[in-house]
Length: 324
Image (cartoon, rainbow, N blue to C red; front, side):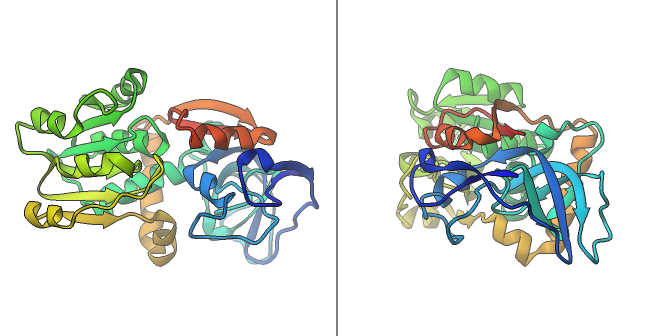
């Protein structure tokens, strides 16, 4: 089989599409023939050795994929050859075949195309966990989503609306805001041309946002936090704009607000039962047509480096998918 290999840390242009040995499932493992793989922000970090998880070289990047089960190892009871499966593995997905532990797999809902299925696990899983467990978002509250046209941001817009919130989308272009509105956002703020804090205040009658979902960080974090409501919850999701921000700690004090970390990957391991319940809820919503992933770009698996570059330069809208 062929796979996109990271043989040395650095830019995505260093990734190599190479022939590698076919994997075989061991006990508790499922072997998938990959049909599509999702590209996520952690890939931009892991290939440069900047992520929390540091796999030894060489490795195949890619944390999620959808495919058809080709074989199962001893002890696997939930899946059989021919089943359509979504797998979240952390690495290994940018390849023609993928080994996954049984517990890392969920069935693809009926009616959900494989290219869309490949893009739901990490983005929707992260945003769902963030809004449900970490923010405890309530119907009627105001949710501000930064980076609202990106993968996790657009998922947060959809999920926030589904959970009964009033959603304010913030993004860097009119085109991105239009996409966020098409997925449920009630209001939009262009934070490249408008004052983020003042616009949030104006749109909320001076109250501020009850929950702020921030996968962007950098210079946008402080003005966003300054727009938070009393007893607000600020979700630290990521730092797509580059720099990790440093917030003055008097701000959460005077706002009675909480800064809440969101690390979905660790959550899936530490609270596996809650994660499974979350995934079951998401799968049901997909099956009911309540969630509609937006794929902004589709590229061949061999061009995974180009896809990662799109995320690094913040050019992606919605999900970027690699197809076999």
